[in-house]
Length: 183
Image (cartoon, rainbow, N blue to C red; front, side, top):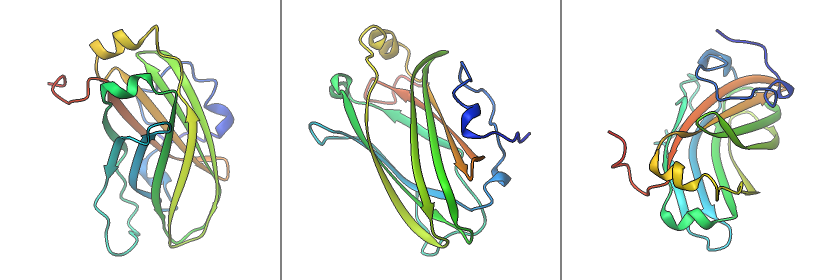
């Protein structure tokens, strides 16, 4: 199932991946995300805050949640032009060199935006937090349809170490503010 992909391979993909492009076993660095938070840059309002229960010790078993979860964005965030993203994660016994994240956001098969973040070096047996501020795409022409079709806005997140894909996460989003539309 695993392919040898590097960051240059991701931008050429025109649509969202239905399958995972690597297996959990490819996470040989035992990277485990414990927190994912998005807040509006202007107002400071927290839009999304997902926390995974943290063990008292850094996990060495490579167990990882592959789906980042479901995002319920409040109506007030529809007008936001920029977001601030914070991710917290632990690293196992191997150092990460050139840790790199590419996120691709889609509405159905329409690419909305690609984000490219260089995280850099992370020491072994560490807890890390990285923060990114980025501009959101102009969604004026699509937002009504996106609201009426919750969870058809999705993302793929690709994580690379030394230019080799080691983790692939997926997420689905709703702009209704609740999960009542998902049944």
